[in-house]
Image 1 (cartoon, one colour):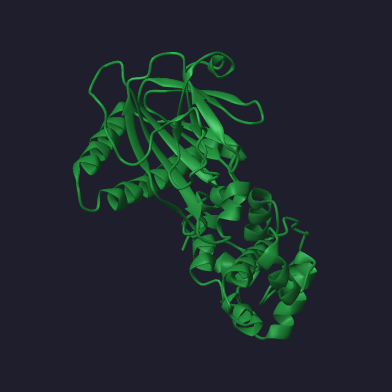
Image 2 (cartoon, rainbow, N blue to C red):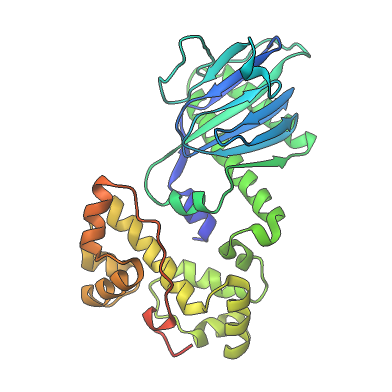
Length: 331
């Protein structure tokens, strides 16, 4: 599984909303799900996203915005609308945190076909495990991708069809928005250039891509710089130099980071034994895994699991060296 697919596997749309409403200016819509990610596709009309930190981002017809949570935020017809008398609407896919003065836009529904309508498809994404933490750290507070009119039209048609179905309509809409999230993030990463995370840039590099795919498909294998270079079809020295330049760290340091990140998720979200987790991320025994994990994360696996049960995951990522990686060969 490639890194983006792995990160997205821990987050899903749930209780998505299809809403087309004729809104009389001034108006605001409050998003109150406390969701890790919220996606807003503007099919018609538009407005300005207002984030708690003061960020303002205009969105128009054909734009898809992804907002990183969990703080509530607004979409307004104009940035000043929230400070003046206005009609307040609220979209909440899976919370009941509704302002008393707000008109709820809840569930799947489809309004009139007026040309004045502001049409939105909104999806809130609930985290099912800790895997999504790495994805959130790679994203800005808000990102906007401009889609072409054909894609926008297709999404509107599909959403309208989903809204008309009595049985399975909510599940259909949720899966549609899962698909849209993947497409939107891929488009944003593709256009982010140097701002994209290193693991994504590496997947598009013709030299590194074969080696990265091989590692992520078989992370428990005893990879060495030489074996990864063979996958890439280049010399060991060239591979190590190119990998370090593009990815920001040596090959085996990257492998160790990936293994420790996966171990974090398994420790926090499963009841697997320490030995079993060590084996699943490429270590021969519990002692070797525990020593590497503590050196890399600053806590033993057992202490980390206890902390994760009642507190947020530690965010510190101590630098690691090639000596920490399984199968290291001095590279």
